[in-house]
Amino acid sequence: MTRKAAGKPQIGGHRLEDAQVLLKPWPHKAAPIQPAEYEQRLAQARALMRQRGDGALLITAGSSLRYFTGITWGVSERLVAMLLTLQGDPIVLAPSFEEGSLSHELKIPVQAWLWEEHENPQQIVADVMIEQDVQQLALDPAAAFVIHERLRAVIGDRRIVDASAIVDGCRMCKSPAELALMKQATAMTLHVHRLAAGLMRVGISTGEIKRFIDQAHRALGAEGGSTFCIVQFGHATAYPHGIPGEQHLRQDELVLIDTGCSVEGYQSDITRTYIFGTPNAEQERIWLLEQAAQQAAFDAVRPGVRCDEVDAAARRVLEAAGLGPDYRLPGLPHRTGHGCGMSIHEKPYLVRGNDTVLAPGMCCSNEPMIVVPGQFGIRLEDHFYVTEDGAAWFTPPSPAIDRPFA
Image (cartoon, rainbow, N blue to C red; front, top):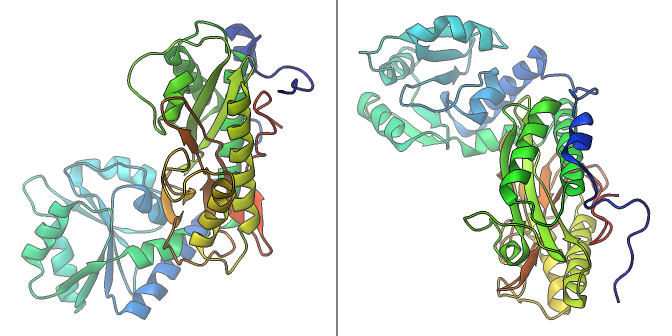
């Protein structure tokens, strides 16, 4: 026997015009990262470099370059990077024709070393290493293989090592300013979810909902609209990342929406699964198990707990109900969660075998999805951050299958 949703219905019953009225630039904006915090990040990177014996650190275009310098450029075939040594301002390598654009991107003092199209920018790195007698270069783990090979060709017998420990050591624990930006991003996406749920009606397509979600994120002030968007109806919810093709909603079908946005480079990532109409007994049973598994994972979080213990807490709930075990279906086919911040997926990961110890400021998704093959799937995804004595939600979890928002 399913219960009736209490209060005003949250699923369906709204027109597109009604939703659009509620889309205005976000009124409670978090402050961007300040120059002093960028300086602190560089100081922390240098401390980790000294511990490891690294004389230089090379960070290429992408989220880590934005983290350390504020430069928002993406990866291309042209090398754009930060070279950090143990003293002096960081060196930023960029094509000469980008000098004007670069000056508008920087948040900290740097030495701009510009290169022309016919030149080899990796040689600049080699020249600095020779000049400063650097024997070991830590390379961004996200750098393309071709960059590694071009560096190896010019630095001689000097070593290139993985900089993951430095990058993750700086990025895994978020500062109060970072948490504030993530709170804004998640609040914006949850608002978009609410509005999208209200638009559900028989016959509406997944494409229509995706377009609305993207437009809504843009209207609220997210960078570039949705960073991603998955919308699935009915049996398609049994596929964690969806299936190709357009679907049209039918009465008494499940809806799964997974989407997020970016605010000053910080990401949101929220999933809601709910019923359009009335759930059957099995759908409601699995939904309640998903809710319980998500809560068990959250309750397991506290400083000093290993990441794999959080994953295990969620799985115990499912296995006690006869699901799984392990990754078997029906059950949970993937890890319980992933780290989040300037990347949608980053360390630490809540997965078996990960002995990373949770610490205050770490942020993760909590999404122990249940898949019933050929029928449906339920994923509830909210993110938390580790506090001194446990965990705190970025967004309140769903209370019921027919009432997705608290």
